Image (spheres, helix red, strand yellow):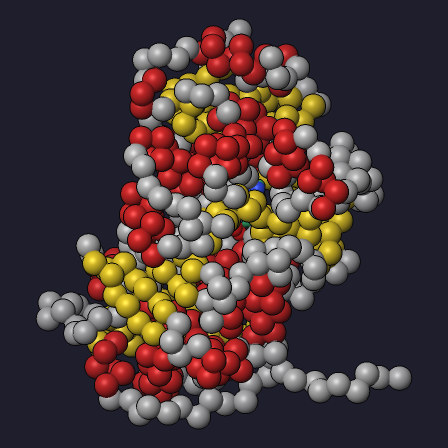
Amino acid sequence: MHGQMMDSQLTLTPLLERARRLFPKKEIVTKAGPGLKRFTYEQVIARVAKLAGALEKLGVRRGDRVATFAWNDERHLELYFAVPCMGAVLHPLNLRLPPDQLAYIVAHAGDRVLFVDPTLLPVIESLAPLLKSVEAFVVMGEKVPGETTLKPVYAYEDLLQGAGPEFPWPRLEENEAAAMCYTSGTTGHPKGVVYSHRSIYLHSLGLSMMDSFGLSEKDVFMPVVPMFHVLAWGTPFAAVMLGTNLVFPGPHLQPRDLAELIQAEKVTLTAGVPTLWLGLLNLLEKEHYDLSSLRGLIVGGAAAPRSMIEAFERKHRINVIHAWGMTEMSPVGTVSHLKSYQLELPESEQLGLRAKQGMPVPGVEIRAVDESGREIPWDGKAFGELQVRGPWVISSYYNDERDAESFLDGWFRTGDVVTIDVEGFVQIVDRTKDLVKSGGEWISSQDLENAIMAHPKVLEAAVIAVPHPKWQERPLACVVVKPDFKDGVTKAELLEHLHQRFDRMYVPDDIVFIDAVPRTSVGKFDKKALRATYRDYQLPE
Ligand code: AMP
């Protein structure tokens, strides 16, 4: 017997229409230079319809890929809805990728139109000869700078002026592609992940659950995570669906910019990677801002060190929401909220649990499998590779022959090594490739990093494996000292700090002091770069 309910297609168009009808007065704010630009939902959504009309005039058809090379701002948001709702596929490009990778990705995706922020024009101009699939460029501003070499090129505002106020949105099927992003973490060429209307719709509902981000109409949400990094973690779609006020930082991503925006716009919820929040934390140690409007600071993309969670919560009364996810998962997989009865635990135990990556959100199923392919017990000790499945998890990469290594019996292999405890809390031990394999033992670089970063004189730390003749690999800690302690910390002091917490076998053989940990294109610690630098490092005997 079948259920007898409507088989409504889960597409983004009714979510946009909902926002248009219900929330015309809600606000979208973008930081532009020293000032702010303010818009209502009514204005922005009217422009979304015009933009779709303009895209159609440019020759964009259902299924065509439209690339963006842009900051987090209101025009980018307009593209987020115009492109998928007209049936085309939004493809935000990572601003920080090297030129050869950008050229590869544009060609692989077959992007036909490319929207570019005026401040980023020189990058696209120098790449243009390689972007053979691109038939038109659009500069996201009032006019096209006279000296640009791009051809054919249009100004965003000119296109909108020439478009009618109404657009007949097509009836789409929920499994049609809505957007795509390329993964940043792989070796070899980046891989394409194609999101469907259905996956984004369901993921948006997922983000609205109290036990995940709990995004709501009442929030003022500031996505700091770039709109090219897993679609700003899917948050713009959920925010518009709900009628949430949005604050976009544009290109202004320094800790002081963010603190000022939170204070001025009374932001209630924001999201980004830990390196960004470590910067904010450092600023708050020196300067005062009123950030009391914040009900949550969402930290994901890399592990939130326990010491960071503790400092935000104890010193600054800012609640941290720690989440784990992947480009391949839209991205949200687990969120570290405590269960009601865990709120009775002593504070330090609660913190320990919240520094884990947390429970899978409804919609995501998990298992972890050891090297022999057996599922590991949920005892918080055994570890294995985390595998996931669910309606917003990838089923195959876009036009790629490397699927076999990533999927197993209907599960997606995350490449993250985890433990899962009896309560179902996942803890990421490491990326498979970041584990240090020392004399048959596996050492978690993340555990060591968290412990080092808990030292009051340390700003950042990354631990990498260095080849060793006897042990195969041994850990080396690369440490950035807080500016105030530049000459006031010794290796011995840090090693002693670790000896108090770890078995001898786990303590790094050496520490190098560096000025900054190199970053990946999405702002995470770039351990690949560090491993290359210290490949031949001579560890002390
Ligand atoms: P990306 O697709 O670039 O977002 O990278 C996904 C990877 O980032 C995951 O497979 C994890 O290795 C890592 N990651 C994301 N969130 C967390 C987290 N909260 N803790 C530890 N690692 C994380």
